[in-house]
Amino acid sequence: MSGTNFTILKQCGHCDIMFEAQKRTTRFCSPRCASLNYKLRKRLELKKGIEAETKQTLRTKPKVNTISLELIKDKEFLNVKELAALFVCGKDTIYRMIKSNGINAVNLNKKLTRIRRKDIEQLFDNPKKQKPETLTVDNCYTMEQLIGRYGISRNTIYGYVTKHNIERIKENGITYYSKTDIDNLFKA
Ligand SMILES: [Zn+2]
Image (cartoon, rainbow, N blue to C red; front, side):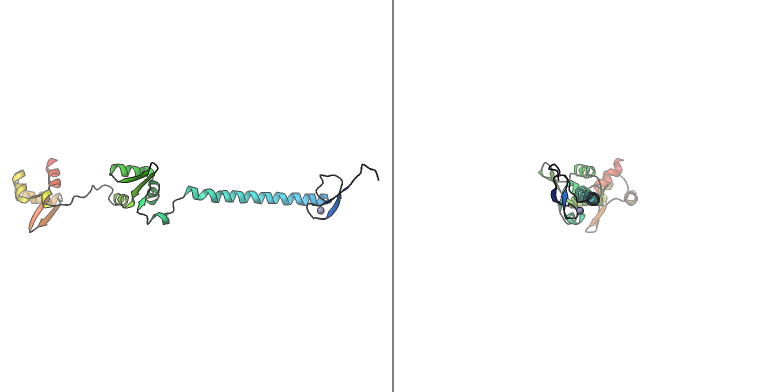
């Protein structure tokens, strides 16, 4: 036995048996254990990698689609992003509708605009229609007024009213014709 040739008692990193190692760095009892352990580690690393990737996907996925229609469908006030999701349109469309239709948007702070969803819903229901005018006696002409104003016969007026689908109301047996409709018709 030479003094330089020392051995160290170690436990195999793979099969756990105690063995005499020639070097301090030796971790396994045999090349076989070393190889098996290497393969095992590779497998575990691969699995870990896949798990990490999956976790990453799960974490980032909800970020992309944070809006749950289930959650917002009963809310009365929504932000622009939620409205866009609800109506399946771009945020720009919502902003445009708010602007061009004078929708009240409550600015809770710079980045938190809240819009009553009913207001937007109505716009989607009648996208082109202006606010419908409620006819009253005051914003209508009577037949007599029309005859006097435009100097045309009763029959001609009847003809126009029918042909152009002039809005009218009836009160106490008297028919009143929408001033807006009539004026637009004769203006043209
Ligand atoms: Zn071993």
